Length: 551
Image (cartoon, rainbow, N blue to C red; front, side, top):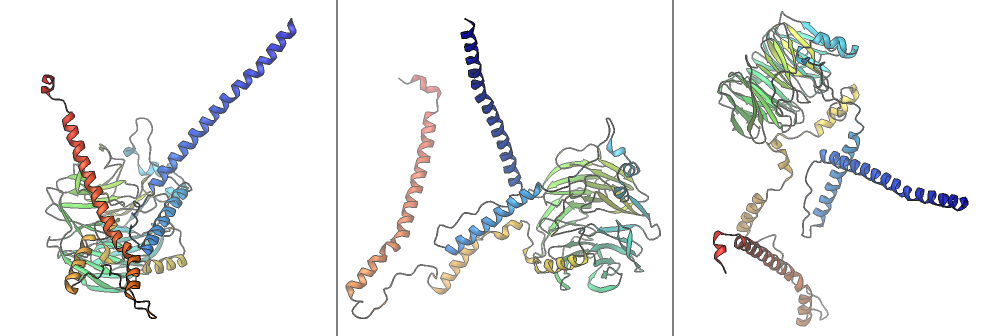
């Protein structure tokens, strides 16, 4: 009696195990599928992040060469998009921000506390230069962020490698200095002095004195166009091509003294602030302003644009700080500062620094969420005259009446750099090769416009107008397809019958376009008729109060 029970038990256990195994496999399969689905979704999001443009519609006509060029362009764009998404996973660095303890406000943390908490190399980036004799100072960092240029109001000019504290040159021009600006590399810089514009090399040797540019107050350098834009006290906006040393454009803005200026890094448009509260946008291709915006009730004190060209931040005499969306030219946020902001600067990661008197305040996410308090704050010795974030570093440079201060601002710089564009660690040989390549790829000033994406589009209206003018001038349409005329052949092959047969062989090709056009018109009319019928039926199906009286 016991043996059958054992056999039954033994026979039941394997069956139970066999029944349980597929369940485990199903669970494993579903888990694997969900993980693969998550990876796929994240991969698609990553690829969409680097999407550059929409796919182009291929021509339906027999333009084989055009079709091939469009296909090649699409393949190159997709490959670049996929490669950028792949290499994005390999980027080693990530940005970080300052976080306080529980109940601690980050704006109360001093620079000394930050310098004591970080490593030695980072703490060396916080320092003060006491230059009270020739201040206040304006400053500019090079494109790679390795070199610093200082210009004192009373004529003192110095350029140095600020990380190693190695002085490159130091001169005194013996007249007042309004602004300083690095050019395409750290080997040359421009100085706006009391009377004229001067160009110096990194050894302090004067290279050029440009007397066409007089009474310059502010300067901006467009790196991809090799253009130095200057704003003067005589209300002139001038452009200098530093690659050939020629003046590209001189525009009289008729707006008085121009002492507020910045550039849009996205499209190379110059933004000017005026005493009547307006901000104007300028291009070297037009003598009139592209856009005029009334931003403040008082004069504009400072303007800054982020690197994506999406947001513009302005401060005015009405003690307000305003954030604008440049795409729609509409205000997003407005903040009131008790003393107003005299200088503004935006970092690569979107942090905003505002100088109010001798206090420098740093704000975070000013355009996405309402800001009630600053992210960081620091007091310097003297009124601030110029501020600038260092590229690829968490450093904010402040020029003031008592010299220069280098602040530590965690999360300000872009952690990953493009080695082909701005490499902070490049050698002298790499800099020379980059300079030659940049000159060969220089963008012409005629291509500067509000929307750079329009450069790749076809202006169909202008093309059709030119085509009509050409027809009127010639008396016939040169693009019209010529009728087939049989070629004359010898040995009796050009008889009337043979010519007619050859004409019949190609007759369907002439009729194909006519038939195709008629079919498209017919389909369009049918579609419109269907839409009208559907709308009429939808209106008729709507219930009314009188439907209850129908039988």
